[in-house]
Structure formats: C-alpha cells, structure tokens
Image (cartoon, rainbow, N blue to C red):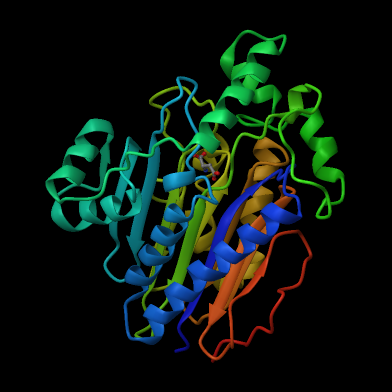
Length: 357
Ligand code: ASP
C-alpha cells in the first residue's frame, strides 16, 4: 500500500485570490501535505498524519481555520473541527469552540479521552484546558478583525435587514445568489491584484469564507482517516454550527471503502450528508463518487455550494467542486514533492504517481 495524503484548503468563490495570496495558499497546502507525508512514510497512522496536516494549516493563518478563522456577526471566533479514523470508526468533534489554537487536536481528545463524540462551546474549551492545549492570545488576528469590519459594513449597507436573507442573497447560506452564479461562470482571475476590500459595494461581493481545511489519508497498514477544521462562515450567527464537525456531513472514514471531507456552505452540505454520500459511492471510483456527491448538492441547493475530496482504500483519489476554486494538494509515496492546484481543470503542478493497485 502506498501511503497517500490529499488535502484541501476550502472551496469558494475566491474572488480575491490574486497572485500573492495564491502563492502563499499553494505553499501552505504543499507544506501541510509534506508534513503529513513525512509522518506516513515514517510509519505514522493515517489519523496522526491528517491531524498533523490540519494543525499545520490551522497555525498558518492562510486558511479559515485556527489562526485564520473568520468571525461571527458579533466579532468572535467560534470554530468547528472533527477527526474520524476508518479503522474503528473512532469519531471526535468540537463545535463552536472559542480560543483554542488547534481545534482538531481537541476533536481528537474528545474521541480518545471522553465517552462522547461531540462537545460544544465552553464544555469543549474546558476539555482543552484540562489537557493543557494552547489557547491563543492573538485571537482574532488584526488581519481578520479588519476584514470583519469591512464585511460587516457592507452587510449593514445592504438593503435587506434580515441576516439570513442577506447571507442567502450573497450565496453564503441556502443557495447561491444570482451574482455568484455570474461570478462563478467567469474564468478565474489568477493574475488579478489582491483585493483591498475597498471595491464598490455589491451584494455578491462579500466572500463568506470557505477556506476551511480538510485532509484524508491512507497509511502503510491500509487504514484511512479524515480530519477537518474551520472557523465556519463569515458573520454567522453566534452559536451556529456547520457541517464540519458532523459525521457523514463534513467527513466520513471507513476502512472498508475509504474517506471523504467536504467544504463549502455547511447548511447545504449537512442536509445532503455529502461525505457519507461520497464514501458510499467510492467503489464507483473516487472521481465519479465526488462528482456524484457535488451533483446531488447542486440538484437540491443550487450552484456554488461545495467541494469534496476523497480517497479510496486502494489509494486512488478524487475531488470535485462547483465553486470557482478549491485549493488542494496531493502527495503519494514515490512522488518527489507534493502537487497542488486551485482552479477547475487545472492540472496538478507536479508529476503525480499512480497508486499501487
Ligand atoms: N463548511 C464550512 C461551514 O459551513 C465552511 C467551509 O467549508 O469553508 O462551516
């Protein structure tokens, strides 16, 4: 069995993904994949590898997870994360947890040190304290606070007063807006300058996040695992929990078949049970399974909602998304370095080896 790790850095409209940000984003994805592969090739389990890769992305600040988490409507950070081990169906998740540097570590602690599968809010934070996990004093970062102010101003300037219909109008919750349909149909602006947030106000302009991180891996013993971590959606209501910490929605792992992790608008993903849907179809091939999963989301909830990555127990991988972009990185034992890509139909930027079937 060739150890393999596949990860994503979130699916979204990526309207402000200029050259500078794209470079940092790709490098962070590659670094996270490299860390996971170092562990896998040293004999670590798939669970250890996905956890370490996600911790790396939480700490990088480049994603909507850990240090880079987006803020609630009230300006706070509330993170969701989960891990699942395909060998024993071990599952641990945390929801709406404040302050912890690495929610994915806390999710694993829930799985391994409590009789529960999911802890939320202050109770989850108490477990983190009990185990000496690091709490960030630099939360939220100045960069995220500045973004929060701009997004909030734009939201407040929009004509609609009801929060959920304003979010829906921007494509963040319960369906993509007409504006996003148009934007999603445009070619990627990879050469654009990084936005400074001072562009003219349009309802479709507020990017609601979607830079969640996730990873799936296969280890040398043939076990699969999945991990996910997110700050959720920008300007979400305090207490809102997305798909990420929910088994079958944000992630699923089963050694008999494989593993999957989703990203995108949680309110759509969780009602489509996207990750379970994809794992159930993995024997059709990971590419077909991920495509079918996204098609099912689209049929019910419209375009621009989600992305998903998956690994079959035999090492084949697949991904699909119907947002404008989804950062992803792959490293399989035998490849010289991790391969990354962001846009639809963009080939991997490094040679990729086939799994040993
Ligand atoms: N799925 C996450 C959520 O809804 C967001 C994301 O994937 O970026 O909380």
